[in-house]
Image 1 (spheres, helix red, strand yellow):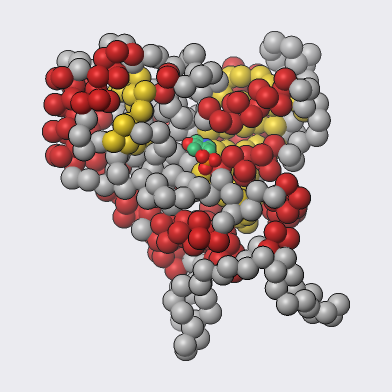
Image 2 (tube, rainbow, N blue to C red):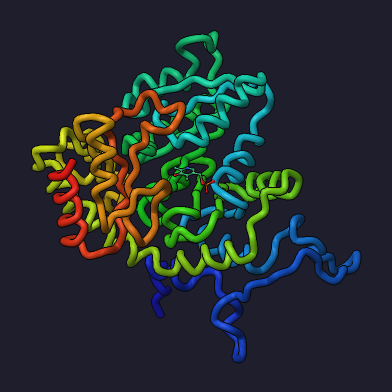
Length: 383
Ligand SMILES: *Cc1c(COP(=O)(O)O)cnc(C)c1O
C-alpha cells in the first residue's frame, strides 16, 4: 500500500475545517451564536465564554487557514485587530522595521505607537534587500546599532505592488533575533506561504480575498509555533478583538471558492496588465506577472501565480480621478479582493506621500476580462 499523497491547497481550501465525517452531521460547521456555554468540571474543563476560547465557527475558519498556511491560526475582528495583537507581542521600546510602502492602517498604527513612545520605527525600501538587511541588523538612522526586535514585511505591497525577497529578509530577521511578520493579504494563502519561507507569523485581512465578497470584516493571524499562537489567543481574549460569528462563518464560506476566484482573477490581471502597458494614456504598470517588472523574478520564485492586484499610473491626480468617474463595470471604491473589480486612487489618503498622485490601485475581480478591458479602455479614453 502506498501512502496517500498530501492534499493540494485547492483541495485543502474545500476540505479543511469540516465537522466530523459521521452520519447525520452537517457538511458545514454551523453558525454558533453564543457568548457562554454550560460549565465544565475540574476534570473536564471546557471553554465557558467565547472570548476566552472561541467557538466552533471560529475554529473551523482557523483550521482551514492554518492548514493552508502551515501554521496555527487565530481569527480576529478585522485585519487591524490581528495586527494589533501581533504588535502586542513586542515589548515597549522595541525597534520595528517596516516597509515604507505597506498598508496605510498598519503604518498609522505604528506611527501612533511611536508617537507615545511604545516603539521606534525605521522605514525601509523592501525592494532593496541589502539596505533592508543592514537596517534589520541595526545600521542606519537613529537605531544606534541596535538590531530589529520586529520585522514587519508585506509582499506584494499595498499599493505599489513591490515584491520583497522573503527568504533573505526572514533569514536576516531571525539572525537578528527579530520576530518576523509577513502581511500576506495580497498574495492570499494560496499564492504564498510565508511560514515556509522563514516567517514566524502571517497576517491576513480576511476582509479581502479570503472573504471575497465585500460583505464582512475579519482578520487572521497564523503562527509557526503553538506557543506563539497561544500568546495571540491571549491577546484576543484580553484586548477583545473577537471575530463576529456570522463574519467567521462567511469568511470560511468565502475561502471555499478562493481557489477558483483567484485563478480567474489573476489570469485576468495578467491580461489587463499587459494591455495597460501598451496603452498610450498609461505611464507605468506595476504587476509582478509582467516580465519587465522589478519583482518578476522574485515573485516567480516565491509565489504561486502573480496575484490579482495591480497598480497603474496615469498623468496625474485629475486624470486618475477622471478614469475612476468614467468606469462603469469596475467600481470606484476602497478595499479589494472581492468578486467585483474595484479601483482607487490611493494617494488621496492621508499619510501616503510616497505614492504617485496618478497611481490607481486595481483589484481585479471575476467579471469577464473583455468587459473589464472595454470598461478600462473607454474610461482611459475619456480621462
Ligand atoms: C485591508 C488590509 C489590512 C487591514 O485589514 P482590515 O480587515 O481592514 O482591518 C491589512 N493589510 C493589508 C495589506 C490590507 O489590505
